[in-house]
Image (cartoon, rainbow over all chains, first blue to last red; front, side, top):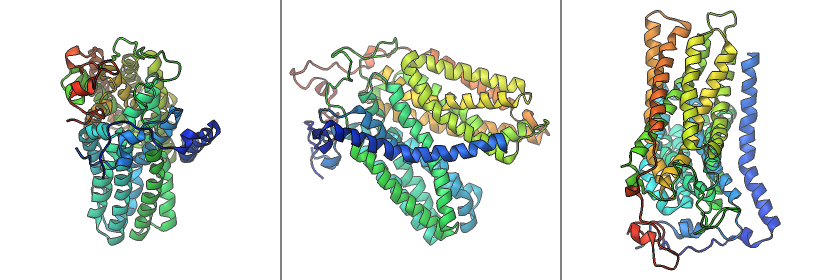
Length: 55
Length: 469
């Protein structure tokens, strides 16, 4: 544990210093990280939803 | 004073560097909310737990019930800590508690000690739910002052989406590992590890905006707020509880959630009972499809209606949720079993209003109380959710049971509940109409101009991170 410095200091982040392309890759990866499981959930929901009209 | 927060998790270490895109913050929020939304899929574990540990239905519901109670308590009491220590600390606490809850439950299932499942999933995991639920809210609002409804709508939609992922995934894990104690333990273990990894993205990715940051295209120094209820002043969580506006919103949220739960709680038996006397009765599989449709409406409502509130205003959107919601309930109650499509559409729209009510309330709080401690205020407001979670099912089940005992069937089982829900929505509508701008006596002292000393922080009696001195 250490002291919480009150003066804000920017986080050291390679993405911030890298080119815009690096940030674009980071953006795509992050959205895919959450988007893929969400897509899986929606797909499974779609399968169940069909039962409303066919069941 | 030495802080208990590790330096790497401190708010000061998560300030965004120049050029950081605010569109990286919603995935950080979703990494938390998509995980903790698993709570709504607990029912998948009930039958295997009941069979393998010889539990009653009431006993197998205990971990979920305790988790929801802990969600409300930790959101209410932990909100100030979340504001003080920042979103990275909060997301880390949430990830550790939520995934530890699964690991403790795995140990409980493996050893046949059910109390460990209750303690792990319910108590420890429940703290992760509450802290995780409020962790990204104030950060999102600060990054998206121009579209706070849309930003919180994305995150809170994730909470609804979490169950969509967890329900089929945990079923598939149980199928693979088996539904005995060993299989349940392995399922809990895998879920704990995967959720810990998944939530880590949120911890690593979340950033708070630098002091004075404004969204692209906004005019410096010009307040984003322009509506009648919107304020550029700041109200502390302690003061917010003393305002009538907080309690009006508490009633609004409680009534809106109660009305939604009224349908959600008994959706499958309700649609079957409703049309049992018609020429086209609803089968078990179609009823399951109806429940899925309501889940979709609930989830989409969180994003669509909350985003719409940025355009039409928070008060107006709650007029829609509560006023049109009451009319839709009236339509269902009046039309009875005469039209199945109409019943389905009305129920789906009511559920979209239910989701929208959850997602819009952080932005409503921001309009009224500012961004200073909006996360903590939101945490306290979630006690309305806990209350509604008891009220809604209680009303619908008690009325349906009483009507059934009296020999009624079909639509008669639910009509009285629907009229009660209409009354509750009218109460919520009136409470929403009573919401006025917060009186200036509750406002924090204004910040001094830059370079003029500690300003607002000094006036508040806090350090520059908001930590009380």
